[in-house]
Image (cartoon, rainbow, N blue to C red):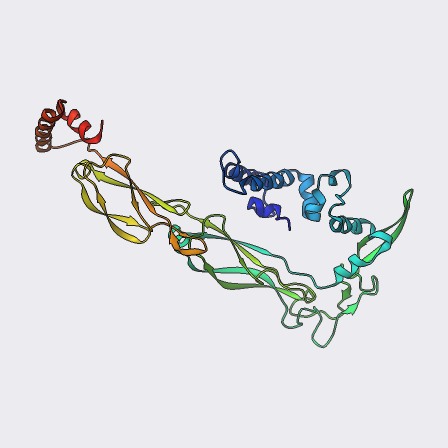
Length: 374
C-alpha cells in the first residue's frame, strides 16, 4: 500500500507551501543518493520527490486530497486513470458516473461500516528521554461512539430508518445522454447525506451524529533509542468508526530537543571536554558527564588538541535492541590561558630552557610546540 504523501514529508494535511518546501529540502538533503549510501535511500528520495511534486501543485494537491494517489497518477491530468490499478479507476469512475452499467456497488460500500480516521500527535522529548525511553502522558481529543445511543444517533427507544430517497444506498442517480452513450451520474443523497439512513428523533447526547468529541489522557511507552522522525502507532485510539466500523489509529511523531552538552550520531553520543594545558602535558584522572551520569576518564600524558577518547557502551541503545549500545566519543579541547602570573611565567621559562636543551628549540614557544606537536 502506498504511503501517504503528507506522512512521507512529515507534515500535517493543512501545511502551507512554505512548510512543505522546508520539509522537502530537509529530507532531500538527508536522502539524496550522492550523500546517503544506505540501502533504500534512493527509493526514499524518489518518494520524497513524488510527494512534494504533487503537494506543491495546488490543483494536484486538491485531486490528491479528494481521491488519493489514484487522482494524481501520470494520466490523471488528462482525465484518465492507469488501468493497471483497476480498483482505483473504478472508484473514480463510479464517483462521477455510477460505475459500469449503473452498478450499485459503490452505494453498498458507502452505507456499510466505515473505519474511523487516523490521528496524528506531535510529541517533544528531551535528549535523555529519547536515549533511555520511558513513559509519557499525553492528552488527545478524538471522536468516540456515543454511549447513550450506542452510535446510532437515534434517541434511546427509537431506531434509524432506511432513507426513502436513496433506499439506503446513500446515493442518488441521474441518467445522462451523451454522444458516447448513456451514463448514470451519481451524487450524495441530499436527504441522508450519504448515510443511507435517517434519524427522526435524534439522540440528545450527540445530536444525532452517533459520536462525541472526547478529551482523554493516554500513557505512551517510548522505546529506548528513538530519534526525531520516529513514529509510534497506538492502535484504536483514532476517531471512532461509523455504523459499527472499527476506530482509526493514533500516530505519535517524536521530535527530540537539542541538548546543551550532548549531540547524537547514530547510536553514538558526542561531547567536548575542556582540560588545562598542564593536564594535557602531565595526564590526569578527571570526572566527565555522560548520559548515564558522571564517569571518570583517563587523560594520557601528552594528549593533543582534538584527541577523541571513547567510553564504550555509554551511547544510545539500538532501537528494538536496548541491550546493544553505541559509544560516547569525547573530543578533548585544551584550554591555554591568555594570561599567567609572574611565578607561572618564571617556571615556564625554566621548563622551556630544559626543553630547549633536549630538542634544540628555544623559548616558551619551542617548549609548548614540542609538547603539543607544533
